Length: 239
Image (cartoon, rainbow, N blue to C red):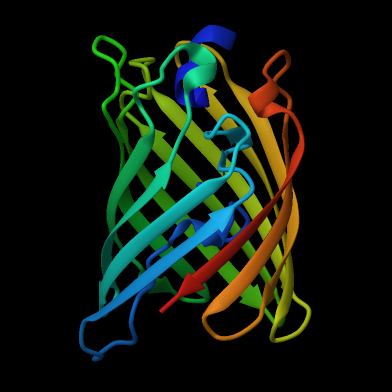
């Protein structure tokens, strides 16, 4: 069971720069360019979402597809999940749908959109799917990029009311292949179970299409194995 369910047992309920860009983010095209389609797929030693394992601390396989035109984008992404640590053995797949726009405002690159987290075969009477709306901004100064993001759900997972997630992140491009990044985030849930999460890691691009990310994740959640500190390695291919 994910923290979207686990939060109900630990308090109430429980994302590309530093939340691992390897999750399948869409990207805008240059103005005047035609529409484009890209695909991505990969594997990880764990699927960690905002500091909490979604695969019961087991391996992940994921894939996504993105459509981009000018500053607009839409896409879909899927991954295996394992919620069995809370008695849910039927929900084994997550399917996300998202769309947005990436304008620029002076030196700030913006990203505003909506994201639907869907789950196949979720138990009756225990809904974990939900919507989030987000706004992100980043600014690059030489090899350093500073960013911030806010996500809002009108009905967070598990029907736990408003959900807000705030994040600040920082990335440094050491070379054209090696980069370092980190983030500090806060998940607030109306029904309770709010927590702080952070991550720090490095990415290495073997080619223009294949990259490795190694990242340490942690939270201040106590008594939940899935939220303990861990190192996750993710290998992703994009075309």
